[in-house]
Every structure is written in structure tokens, then in C-alpha cells.
Image 1: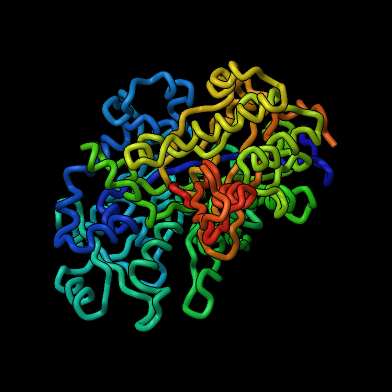
Image 2: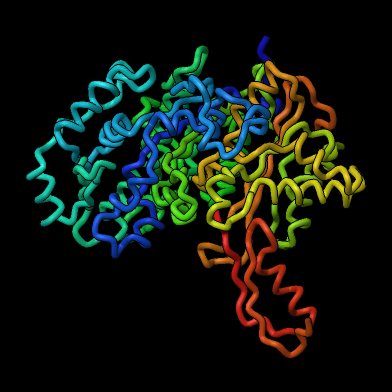
Length: 492
Length: 42
């Protein structure tokens, strides 16, 4: 029986998480572009460290991302993960898929409503034939067709005379080119538009996966979409003022939806989920979808460390996700809007003060402690991507700080820190895709654990580096509690 | 370390100790903080 009242807490009805393996685009990440500026053929330099799709598909963190491998199984796997592929790794998982590059290039082209991205005939034909047979974004999904490709002479002219951005394959061959959107607008260059298009395409792929689930909401029943990807879509007069949400909704066939973008660097998804929940609880909309696409600029961000260690560049995937927030169905995990943790302006930036604001304060508000949470999902960046570059194990650092808070609050003994981290944390498994790596990748696992599994309560927290934009020295953070439906001690 | 009367550049890290927290410690130790920055490595 459905429990539908305007006062009921909203639920997380469905989650999708997708990856697109794009080794050719690693060259166009911000760091490789800057570092390899003086290298004549950057792709030749990168090639020995670029993985093929089979290796990317069998990479254990990616299999966790799409839900085929659990976080506990990952913790038990031998290291390094890049040398221990998952046997019989699937392309599809319960949460989404790992799309190969030749199909993703076609998907990018279908998302381009201005004919700025052109692929060669061969690349376009290959993409069309494989993408048309895709179970979720195939021809029958109603998406735009993959445009007919063009000759290399046309591409060469666009690159030479019209400042188009060349897309060069791992094998060195030209795949296509991205024209600027305007002759004199630095916010509409081929590079910027490709980044925005990649964000749109991965978000759109995730949304179609969400809508393809058994029992999923019909596309036309989605009434509001919130995008929390980090790309600044706009033009020279309003840099970043645009709206990816509606573009994604349009592509995915959500004809009755409108939407908007919510930004707070890596804490954007937490804000977006909170707002989606509030819109549902207020009865403004019955069904809200939160989406985010990936960050092309962050591809290869730590590539120098990977090259130095003679390992594959593991930042070779774009990520995307979609979450359906709906009215209480009596089954799906409850999003407790009475236990939102917020980093306030006056919260300060000392690590324990931040942790207190995000974790113990909201839990205490509803009569809970850190020990009432089965699993915490924090920054989930894959340490195999960050440690070779000297950036440390970000999830582990955050889990240890959280465990220290439990010690300060006399919930555990100092000797219990390792056990706390092991039992209530998890290894990082997300690609370094900024906002997406911030807590979100565990959402699919949590949803299963809170419905079919043994979890009672999980907590998600995202931190945003607001200071990067040079408008404030403050960080940001927001946390959410997800709970098994019907298990609600402390409900306000 | 004696910080009284010294000029300090406070460099912090988001997932470690952020710049403003470093700066606050330095100020309380008598230093003059001339620049505060926080890095995010992910």
C-alpha cells in the first residue's frame, strides 16, 4: 500500500550510475593539455599508459561503481587493482554500465543540437551501428540519430580555418572535430563546448538508465530535473549561467519536465538531493530527478603520477548519475529531511568542527549517534588514482577524522578507530570526477542494502571546495541520512 | 617553533587542515598571516 501524505518523508526510488571509457579524450583533460602543451604529439606520449576498454571494464573499482562488485569485496581484493582484473566483468551492472569510447562518441554527437561536433564517416558509422542496438539508448529510445560523418578534408579545414578542436584517437588517427559556438566567445570554444557536451551526454545516459528500470517512472511523468554537474554552461555575458538540466531532460524524452542547475562544487549533489526531497515533501512535485554528468577537464588529472609509476592512467572515464526522488512508496529508502547536516558560515574550517556539523549535530538532532549509522559514504576517490600523485588516500583520511570524532564524543575508544573505519567506511572506488566521487557512488549499493539487504541507516556527506572560485575562503558541506523504510526512530 | 613577529603564508588542504584553520593557529601564536590558501587535490 502506498503511503502518500504531504508530510511523509521523500524516498530514493531509483539510482543509476554510469561510466564512459574515453582514453582518446584523456589528452584533452585540463592537466594533460597544460603539461603536454610543448609535446608535438601528446597522444604518442600518453599511449603506453592508456587502457583499452576490456581493461577499463574489468577494473575492480569500475565494477563496484556499476554495482557488480560490493565495497566489501573490493576491500578484500588484492592490490594494485589495475593488475588484478575482475574475471568475467560485465559491461552492465545493476546500477548502470561502462560504455566504450566508440559508442560514446556517437552518443556525444546525438547530444549536439548545433552540428558543432563532426565525426569521420568511419567513426560515425561504427558508433551508429553499435549505439542503435543499445538496450537503453538504442534507436527505439527515441533519441536523435547519430549524424552522418564527414570526410577528413572537411575536418582538416574546420581545424585549420575555423579553430575546431581536433579529436585524436589513441591510434593517432583523427576521429572528429568540435567547432566553436562563436567566433569571439571564449566561453564557447570547441574545448569548452566539448566539456559541456560530455557532461550532458553522461548525465543523459544515466537518466535513460534510470528510466529503463523495471517499474520506473515514465519519462513523461518526470516533472522537474535538477542538474548538479559542475560544468559552467553559458556564454560571454553569463559564464556559467546556463541550464544543463533542461537539456538533459529534453534529450531523454522528459517532455513535461523543466529544471535547473544547482552548484556548490563537490557538495552540489547533496544540495540537489536535499532540494529534490523538499520539492517532493512540499507536494510541489511528485517526482523529481537529480542528474549530473562527468568532468572531461578532470580526465588524466593525476596522469603524471601514473606515468611515473609505470601504471595505466586510471582517470580515463567520465561518470554520470541519476536519482529519482519520489513520494513515500512504503518500500524505498527514506531521505530524512529532519536530519540534514550543514556546514554553516560560522561552522569554521577546523576538521573536527566540519565533521561535527556534518555528522554528529544532525544525528543528535533526531536522537541518534554515529554508532547508529551502518555505513558512511564520504569522499570516495579511488586511492589508486590519487596516491601515485602524492595526493594521499582521501577516503581513508576522511574516515579516520570521522572516527576521531567518535573518540572525542566517547562513542569508541582510541583503539577502536581502525575497526570503526573498516566496519562503517569503505575503500575509495570512484574516478576522480569531482562532484560525482563525493559520496554519490555508494548510493546504488545503499539503496539495495536498505531494501533487500541488512542495512538500516546510511549517511552521505559531500564537501565542496568553495575557495577554489576565490569568492570565499569557506569550504562547504552537506550531509543526508538514508534509512530503511519503516525504521524511523527519532523521526521529528 | 617561534612564530611571534614572523610573517606566515598559511597553505592548507581541504581533506587535511584547511588554510583558515592553519592561519588561525599561526595568528594565535603571534604571527602575521599574509596569505591564506586552501588546495583541493581531487
